[in-house]
Amino acid sequence: MTKTLVDYFVSLVKIDSESKNEKEIALKLAEDLKNLGGEVRFDDANKKTGGNVGNLYAYFPGNIAKEPILFCAHLDTVIPGNGVNPQILEDRITSDGTTILGADDKSGIAQIIWAIKELKNTKTAPIEVLFTISEEIGLLGAKYLDYSMIKSKIGFALDTHKVGAVVIGAPFQNSMKFTIHGKEAHAGSSPEYGVNAIKIAAEAISKMPSGRIDNETTCNIGLISGGDATNIVPNKVVIEAESRSHDKKKLMEISNKMKNAVLSAVQNYKLGDFSASVEVEIEEEYQAFRVDENAEIVKLGQNAAQKMDLNSYTIIGGGGSDVNIFNQNGLQMVIVGTGMDAVHTVKEFIKINELKAGAEWVRNAILLYSEI
Image (tube, rainbow, N blue to C red; front, side, top):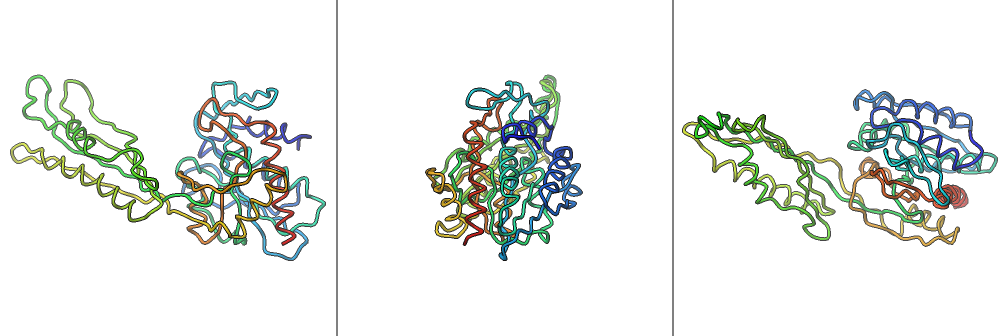
């Protein structure tokens, strides 16, 4: 391993690891974890995700008799994440502006491993490390994780912004896909024999809720595709959307409003014996979670930050992460910050002092947990 945390982080972001292509970085990290004394294994989640490697797990037995605690981050990055050329500036690390940096989530990976490295000769409780695959494309690694590997009951995922932040809640999410079927015809010679699927979609979208619905609920129409040429009345359009809420009842209400807007629009388009139709697909992507502010894992996260004189605070998040799936499967987990900023953009960066603070936070969390 490299001599400094910054060098180690930089070495990780140079490895291509867009979703479903995490094998190279996973094998490197597996070797690093083994060299630190970890018992390493992979599951076969990739057989279901279509990726080239499974979730990476490591167990450090420690030497204090106590249940283990889990630290998690994800291996994959969003696009464009290949060929990252990191730039070490005076106070931060960036990409060269042509790709993302990959601090989401390689800062979390580096911080976890660096903290374990620093504690290699220190008495600690058992530690579990999990690096998941395909988080960025639907939390797939967490969804298909072999949960029989995990012995911890509580843990942290390092996958948000400010070091010291503890995310204790996140919403439900539904994904929606509406495939509208009209009738094609020549747009110039016989448009009256066609039923325009794009026009149906436009009417449906005009009736759909969108944006922030209330302080717990959001809805977004994200994708629309259809049509083959300007001289053809389009016979098919696909609308893709999502809804999120911290309240399951509100989630269902907003999802039903989206569906009913399409069903209502379709009913208005008939031509002789032909009636427009729609295929409706609504899928629950993940369930909400909410961890009590007084839970042991929350207090541990805050105390680890306060030990560094960092301001620590709890957040109810608006996005989904592996932690939604972990809590759904019986683990009590929260999300903590690494210092990553401007994620999912080519302007992504991490301040060097935040990168170091995140590693110190992990170290403190392990030591404090070992003392409890």
